Amino acid sequence: MKVAIRSALSIAVLTATAASSAQANHEQFIDDSSLNIHLRNYTKQDSNYNQGQPHNVARQWAQAIRADFQSGYFANVIGFDLSAHHVIRADARGNTDLVDPGLLQRRPNGGAESYGKSFGAIKFNLADYGVFKYGRMVLDTPLVNSEDEFSLPGSVEGYYADVVLGDARIYAAHLLRINQPGESGYDRFLDENNRNSQVNLIGSDYRTENAGMRIAYGRQEDQASSLYTDVDYTIPVSDLTAVTLGAQYGQNSSVGNAKTTDQTKGLNTTLRWYGLKAGVDYGNMSFALSFVDIGGGARNGWADANVDWRNKGGNDDIEFQGYNSVLISDFSRANEQSIQAKVGYDLSDMIPGLDVAALYVRGDVDASAVAVLGATTRALDTSEYNLHVNYAVPALEGLKLSLAHGAYEVKASGLANASNTQKDTRIIASYDLVAF
Image 1: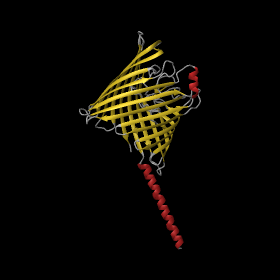
Image 2: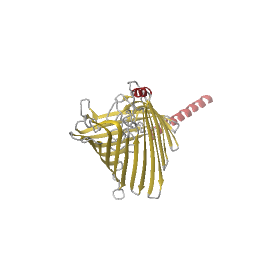
Image 3: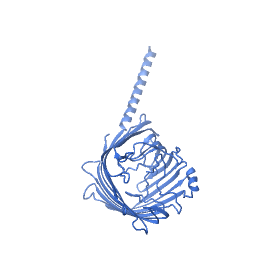
Image 4: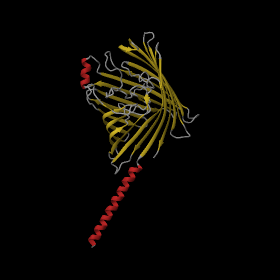
């Protein structure tokens, strides 16, 4: 009888313990979960004008809705992320075959329409030092990033892991498919012979109060490899003044089958580029100068320094992160040198939440034979100016209003009536809400 009583008591204790543990796991899973809502009302007008030809203009107006759910970890081990993104067309005018603002999804027969996408990933906690994920997700690395300048960001499908050690993060990814901005579907990564060829990434970020570093390396077999490095250091001079210095270096190369093919055609198989920057913050004002030199050489091959991961769609929409990548142009053509001057002013002392900035970039392209604007020339002159106004509404936390305008011009040196001008105007009202 005593044995039976002791057994019953043991079962009761074990049951209570298991129930308590399950309750604790359930509470941790719920308490660490979050749901973020992002609303973006976006109007964008693009125009393109070749000298002596008709002026092409297109305008789109869209309302984007993003809902991103991140769960906590059940038993501190497993969780999941889910996202639902949708764009509602408000208005679209102009021929997107000639000028495409990119806020909406293009119809196969022309025009633009609403679109959406849902995606998610399962994740595993790496002993509170990092995370391992499999599924579809938004990445923000120098060599594969979300390019979040449209209605919705792009995303990728694959495996991702990172580990955080103090001020440093080390990450790696094996990517199978990519979803471009303005598209709802996913395209496989393919090499130039249309065979499956995934993209592998490894990188690290390091950030302290005054210094930062990013390094990333990526490779797509029988297609390309890419290296990116970026360092910066801030020197406090006084309570009001600080000086920031920075440098970046990148290298893109054809690899495997693609390299053999390029060599057979007599093309350049490697492109190297670097950038330098210096900035001064003085009170509410900021000044910056930056210089970027894109390599290439005398032989044709790499047309620009943009990362050349090839996919089924054949397009390359990975955002180039050079110092002189601005509103319209990346100033990343092969054999292009560019210099940028930028000034910004924080007007919060007069109008809380308001800041403005203006910049100008001047570049030139030196090439043995560049086909542009229907002509062949040895040099191009490039330039762009941008104006930015941002206002964080104090009365409603999370509400931001933005206005951006830019004009980019490219001229063929020594040729009359050989120029192209692009203009871009963006008006954005965005609202970020933490649901829980």
